[in-house]
Structures are given as structure tokens and as C-alpha cells.
Image (cartoon, rainbow, N blue to C red; front, side, top):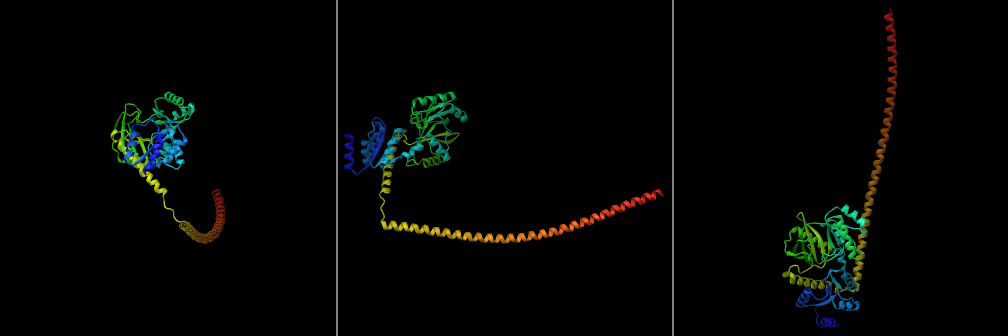
Length: 403
């Protein structure tokens, strides 16, 4: 109660931007304290909303109403429903709950990559039936394979299988741990370091390569972290990913296969503490973006209303323009119709001429056939005369020989 009253007093006395800060830790950690410290310097009042504690709708609603905008600093599944509630209450959230559809669901992210021709490891969605899953893995045929739950953070519910037996054992294990039995995917394994590109306001603000002896190189499992250079190919690829997901603050995980970049996944709540020296700078950039985004959304809301007669004139003008456009289309169609009718009449005339020619040729053909038939008759007669003369000649020959 004391925390709520002090926050209410702060909001009442100051005209600062009030930002609701969602987190899911038991208590305020290093990052939360850093946000509070920098927000104070930048003239921003942070209202801390902890979703780890018991969820009280009334208390939650009263906190949300104090805020101008909400910043979500958690990627846990339990956050999605409260975010939807906040949006239902009419408050802007960074980033919107709708964007989680493609960033947190690994299967939907794979489909989004395929749709936008973004290189990503080959993936299949597996059946909840083990017999069918075995057949699907056999058909997939890419070993070793990585078995993942469609939702998961911090490397949980992600394991590598070298054989069919291992893959089925991992699936059974995941189903035992997860009573909801959420769908699983099988993903092509690519042996590579894990590269992370952090984006704020869809601009690259940090790069980190996570080197580890383990095949898992997420923020949790990666040991050594170094910076790396962003080439032109990667810059273009990152732009394509940010356009496809439409997310403002994110971390893109990448791998390298035969020297080519491959997008593994996008994290909607990227870790800002990969490189300690840059942690404060990134938190500051996030707060600057939140400030800029809230001003932008306010400008959209406070758009000066036009008078009613102006709106009506605008409406009628629009109608007139539509009418003119339709009349133009009708006139063009009439012209087309005339043109077509002319073409048809011309074709009819042509057809008549051709039919006359054909009929004339038929008459000529008949006459010729008659002449040919008469000549054949004459030829037959001559032939019969010749045969008769030959017979006579033979008879005369025989008589001469006898004498």
C-alpha cells in the first residue's frame, strides 16, 4: 500500500512521463535498479509492476491507470495475458502483445522466415503421438537434431538428440515436465558460435558472439562474450527480420553455416547486460526510445478535430471524385465497346468475302473435277482401242507364221 501511495503522490506532484515497468523477478535486481536510477535522471517516473507476486486485478488496474505508457521487461509466458489486459484498458505497450505471436512461438517464427525468404535452420512441427513423431523424424532425416518446445526461454526445453532413441526419450521427458504437453519442434543442428544482434528502435546498438564449449550458446550457457563486426549482408538480413517481425526492441540470435548467416530466433526481451561496460548505455537508449514512442503516440491521439461542415464537404468532395472516376470508367468502357463492335463488323465483312472466295473456289474445283473425269473417260476409250488393235496384231502375226 505504501509503495502505491508514494507512486500516486509522485504522479500527482510531477508532470514527468509515467512509465509502467513490468518485471517478473522476486525482488528488484541490478537491471531494475539501473532503470530506476537512469529514469530519475531523464525525468521519467517508473511505476514498478511485479507479475511474480499474486495477481490482484484491482491493484493492477489502478497502477496501469497512473501510467502514460507501459514497458515490458520480461519474456515469460505469464506476461502475455496481463499485456492483453493493459491494451484492453487503452494503454500503449512496448512491445505489443500481438508481436509475441511471431517472436516467442518458434514454429510461427520459422513460418514467418520462410514467407519472407529469411535463411533459418530447417524445422518440422512434431506430432504428440510418438509413433507418428518417429515417422516424421525419419522423413526429416537431419541428424543430430535439436528438440525444442514452441515456447521456452533461457535455454529451457531445448535439447540435442544424436539418434532416434535419444529424440524420443527427450520428447517423453519434456512431456513429463510440461503437464500442458505443448507442441514440440525438431530443428536442424548447425555447429556454430551463437551471434547476438541487439536492436532498439529497429537499429543495431550492440553485437555479441557467445563462445562456449557446450553446444548451447544462449545467454545463460554462453561463457565468453566478444563483440563482432556487422557486414553489409548481415545488416540487410537484420533489416529484413525487423521488418518481418515489426518489433522495436529485440535480440536476434544468428548462426553461421558454410560462412553464410542463418537466423535462429528473435527474443522480444533481449538481455542488455551481455557486455557490462555497455549495460548502462543500452538501458538509457531503451528509456529514450520509450520517451520518444510515448510522444509519438500522444501526437496521434491529440490530432486537432476539423469542424463538421469541413468533414461533410470533405465527404461530398470524396463522393464527387468517386462519381467522376466512375463516369470516366463508364465512358472508357463505352469507347471500348464501340471499338469492339467496329472490329466485329469488320470481321463479319471479311468473313463474307472469304466465304464468297471459298464458294467460287468450290465451283472452280467442281468444273476441274468434271474436266478430269471426262478426260479419264476419253483415256479409257483410247486404252480399249489400243488393246483391241494389239489383239488384232497378234492374230495377224500368228497367221503370217503359219503361212
